[in-house]
Every structure is written in C-alpha cells, then in structure tokens.
Image 1 (cartoon, rainbow, N blue to C red):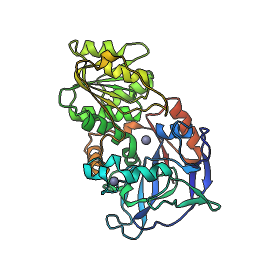
Image 2: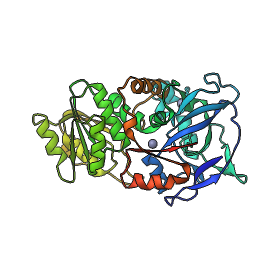
Image 3: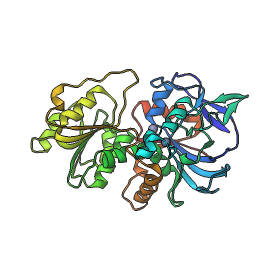
Image 4: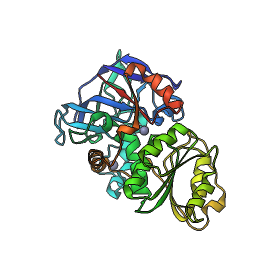
Amino acid sequence: MKAAVLFEPNGKLSIENVDLESPKKDEVLVKIHSSGLCHTDWETMNGYQPINLPAIIGHEGAGTVVETGEGVENLQIGDHVVCSWNPNCGTCFYCDLGQPILCEVQKKYNSQGVLFDGTTRSSINGKKIHYYSLVSSHAEYTVIPKQSAVKVRKDFPLDRAALLGCAVMTGYGGAVYAGQIKPESSVVVIGCGAVGLSAIQGARIAGASKIIAVDINDDKLKFAEKVGATHSINSAQVDPKEYCISLTDGRGVDCAIEAAGHNETIQQTLESSRPGARIVILGKTPYGVEINLPFYTLMGEREIIRTSYGKSRPRIDFPKLANLYMSGHLLLDEMITKKYKIEDINKGFDALEKGQLARGLIKFE
Ligand SMILES: [Zn+2]
Ligand SMILES: [Zn+2]
C-alpha cells in the first residue's frame, strides 16, 4: 500500500510502498477514505515533538472496516469509522476516573509508536515503521486498535467525517465541554485554524451571542465568519483586549479560547476575559518553550483549562457530531478548503504552513 512516511524531522514526507500485516487480536484493518492535514503533523514533521522514526503520520482519518481481528465484536466489515487517537483501555486509573483522554495504556504505547502489544504492523523491506498517535492515517490502509475505530452513521460523508478525528472534536469540545459556554455567552477565539474554527462552531451551537474571532491572517478570519463568528479582528491591527472589553460593557468575555500556541496569544486570552471567566488553552508551543504571564491577568479569579482533545469521549462524541452535521448545525463542507492526492501531501503541508487552508484533506482513490 502507499503511505506517507516520515524518515527524518526535516519537514518532508516520502511516499513509499509499505507492507502491512493483517489485524491481530482486538485490532481492525481500515481502508482510509480521507485523512486531514493537521498542524500537529506539521509540528512533528519539523521536529517540534520528537517521535520514533520512521513513522507513518496522520491522525485525523476516516474510512471503512475491511477486516477484523480476533475478539472484535463491536465492529463489522463495511462499517464506517472515524479514527480516534485516544483509544483508551477502559481499566486503568484514568479510565476509571472518567478521564479516558489520559489513559495510561494509550499514553505508554502512543509515545513508543507501537500498538498495544508493543509491535507495529507496517514495514518496508522488513524494517519496521512506527505508528503515530496509534492511527497513522496518511496511508491507504491502517491497522488500529478496535478502540481507535469509532463507528459513525453511513450517510455521513467520509471526507467530512475525517475532520471529527482531531480538529473538530478538539475545538468543539474545547468550547462546549471545557469552556462550558452557555446561551448568550460572550466568547473570544484566538487563532482561527481548524481547531479555532471548530471552537467557534461549538460556541455558536451552544448559543453564544458574541463570538469574536482573532487571527493575524485575513483569510482565516473570512473562514471564521463563514462558520459563525459574529465579530472578527486582525490582531496585527486591533488590540484583542481592548476590542473584547469594548464589546462587553467594559468587563471582558465570559470564555476565552486559545488555539494558536503562542505565549502572546495565551496572554491575550487572559487579558480579553472578565474576572471569573473560563480560559481554555487548546494550542501548544514547541516542546521546551516556556510561557510567562503577567500576574495581574490571573487576578480576580479565573479558571484556566488546558485540554488536548476537548475533554472528549470519542465513542460518545463522534456519533453526536455526525448527527450535528447531518442536521445542518455543524458546518464541515465550509471547513474543507482543498483535497490532495497522497502524492501531493507535501504541497498540502506547504499550503498549511502558509495559512491558506481551513483544512486540507488527503483523499484516497
Ligand atoms: Zn486506560
Ligand atoms: Zn491533530
């Protein structure tokens, strides 16, 4: 099968013919239909987050189950699935605590780039290729744990479905679950990539009346207006703090969401929010980078929440998000800017780096 392999953290992927084994116990083989180009992939390609190499990256995929391993009872051949990068074990400390995103088993094997039995399923000339996020969706096929394959309704188009696997779940959950946005809330979202756009949609669906989109790229602000921002500002020209305060009777917003991953934007979320607000940090800086905050931004009580997957429970949330799309509430067509063949994946990541995409997708034949 064809797959995009990262050999060195030099910003480029190589299209290779890769051998793939059949699924083993509690695993499924998925034929990938579409795979989203996520900023986290780009960060990994450029060495921001070290992983075991070589690896097939991609962690935002959707496709069809074509083979099931022994012990797989929850999935059938032909099922449509969205890949979750949080295949939780169900029995560890964090799973029992109700925080499956922190599953210790998932964390251990994910960091090693292997499946739950400590091995991989793909190789080139006998040399093993690691997993990425237990998904590895920039490939025609992938073998993943049964917990990673989340069944969704078959009338939900698989290219839109792919987006649920990372950006949409993270942004929507960041707004609705972490941000606890209520009807008539005021919200600022700083950073309007795919995660920020999904947070804007979560805020809209939760009933926020003021949704202020902030970015330094006017194209991204246009995407934000399409999916529900009521106000948008370019922070290279307008100070987000002053703007948010002027729109909220001098108080600041009820909920501030950061989806850019910079010290400055994290500061802006705090400065733009009112005392008592919830601050949700979804972006991430490169490993090793420290952030610093003026202490006054913490005064008067604020809740700061950092979450990686929007406090999601994928098996419950992916089918819900599919319903929200099918009922017209969640806008996914508007999020897909361009589709690429796997051979053109590096062009897609170049466009992502230039800020030209709300979301780019690899679409397999
Ligand atoms: Zn667990
Ligand atoms: Zn992602």
